[in-house]
Image (cartoon, rainbow, N blue to C red; front, side, top):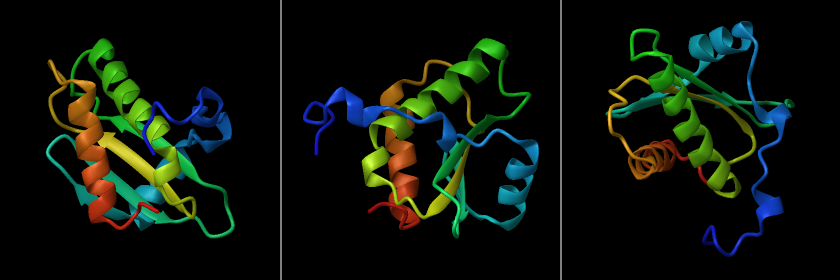
Length: 123
């Protein structure tokens, strides 16, 4: 289903889907399975009886605050647009570790979808 065919209301990204607590990030890093790409690492684990959750992170030494925010924004938008293709029985953590520079949204989207496909995390 193309993004154009999906109405805007179906592409909302509920706040309860976002991981926020540092302990959630630590637990996911400790217990999760890693899939590393050129720019992004995806860490995932089954969510059990908890709802679908996703977290976005960057390395501190990646770039200035503007670059780190841009990297998180690109990852969040890729997940938001493809949320209907991602399994809902998992917890995800996406970590941007490559250079931000002049990376476009298409680069982030392609890498994330490739990693999710490689990990069998798509519906």
